[in-house]
Image (cartoon, rainbow, N blue to C red; front, side, top):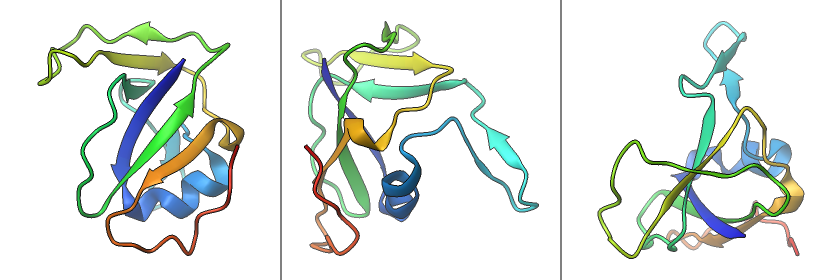
Length: 109
């Protein structure tokens, strides 16, 4: 299943190197884990926004659960979550960068 993940453009280099991960280094260098333990997705491609990257994610073979903790703003959208597993770079493709700076982007799939 193809889903979409949006995040700040400042995360691009890390995502290209590590994929989508459940923890990031904090100010002390120790790993700060996600409070929820999950990575969240949308079934509908988000609208482009400044300083936001949109990633297409191949979730085939992963345990993807519907996120029923809230209701999407767009009723044609469905929110999903993958708990306790990172998403490797081979599953990711950067779709949008409204700044036009694709200097860090590598070709995927």
